[in-house]
Figure 1 (spheres, helix red, strand yellow):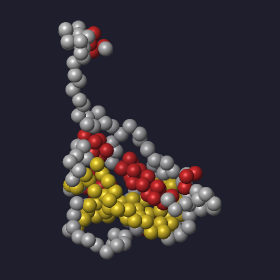
Figure 2 (tube, helix red, strand yellow; figure 1 turned 60 degrees about the horizontal axis):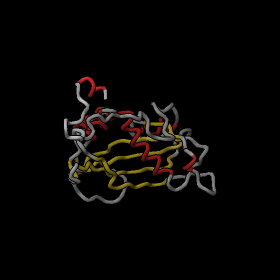
Figure 3 (tube, rainbow, N blue to C red; figure 1 turned 180 degrees about the vertical axis):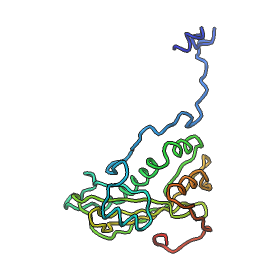
Figure 4 (cartoon, rainbow, N blue to C red; figure 1 turned 90 degrees about the horizontal axis):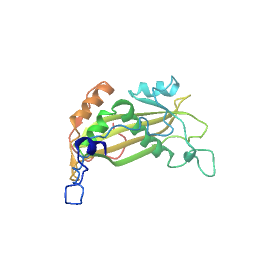
Length: 214
């Protein structure tokens, strides 16, 4: 309304009786990282010193988070974590990895380019039982690029002892606006290389044996 008054126009063409059509906004042009921390149970900031942190650092992980179970993680009949808790935690750890290391530049680039990052495969290997009263440390890294696929490695360990709770390996794909799989933008791989301290390895596309990345 202020714009119409300032320009001396009501926004309606004379004699037409209809408002002038608005030019549609280009998708993502005004997009921003509006929620700085869109996860639950993943504590924002660097993980506090612990045996769990030491164990994951020793395996080469550079981005670690303290993790606390949320009520939905509890098994309905026992105090341990339910079967889907690890999947939820790993999903939120991937979001936290982006939020802490690559936002707002990477999310904004994806929206404005009309691209989508999807999980093609998610595998979880359970090593021990987790309990609601325990606190954990979680980690995520990009292991390599195989063909057009990103392969991620994720870990969840008990904080005070470093005991492994579970591990996930994830295949991610970048999808174009036309619904086609495309190469991962070099922008992202460069950002990951800086965070992880080394370039992301590129491997030829191939069907590998089932299991965590070597």
